Length: 453
Image (cartoon, helix red, strand yellow):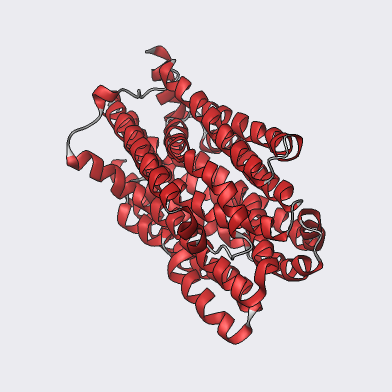
């Protein structure tokens, strides 16, 4: 009990900048390692050929679907759990954790079954051309088998983060990621499995991450528990998890849809080299973006705990500190990415067409990376405080309301250039719309604090 009281005290009394950094560093490391092992898949599979490289981008869209459900249950549960723990209600926290975990397992199994039955149509839907399809099928079948582990790992990782136990969450993700990096060349080239080896490596690493994260709950390292007897039978409890987590579902789900449309547009206007170039560009952007996302994930439990405890000033302070740190790091990283865009493309795929298409695409993306912290931190503020409607609306902007129309319209006027310009334009518009919402709400929090005083 003493450890748990100390955890509550830490979350509500530790100076906010120190707390956000303490919780953010493990999250940044987790996101960074996840990005690197995704890049490792791209690097090793690209050695097989341009079509194989394009397959990674296709399956990436499929993984986004799995993560969409995992993050929906994970972020929804985490936000609720943080606020319950901030208010001292551990029983309801355990009920929420158990419900979200077992729902994510069931959802993952449904994705596995339907995906394996319809694997060819699914891969075509996500942009596989006839030359990319064989590689996408070989890679994707193992990713589909691992779907329940991916969705459930997302849930456990986010629950641990929202409890303020970011280090434990990091251990599960980073170990699996490092394992994947090591297994890729072993399976692909050592055992001559090709793209099947990359898929098998990804599946096994996800299973290991799942087991490590589950062990944290079974060994009582967390405040909440995962017990099948604590799964809620009340529809309103499940609805609350889904409604708050729906912002994450929209964000990840639209990432998947946008990847599908992007791949199809790239294939139409530039063929396999364009699909490969867009795949590498997206992976690099996510690598840099993971810094802002990691800092934001350090802010989320701070916001949830302190909002639940009625300490609104600390929520405001955390928001502006997170925004400042994210913008600083992203700004520096975007300069490096812009300067070395051509070298980065050549590193992953030494194909003149891929380099020619990908270099300006990556540079355009780098120019607007500084907009990401403004959009991400604003979205995370509302989701962490349980403001489902605003969080869902802001989540729909980047990959949905802005990107999808842009990627369908701009190529009609600018051809392939319009394809890779769509995302940077959508990024800027998302930040311009999102940030005023957050400024208005932080002013509201300031008034609430004044009333308390």
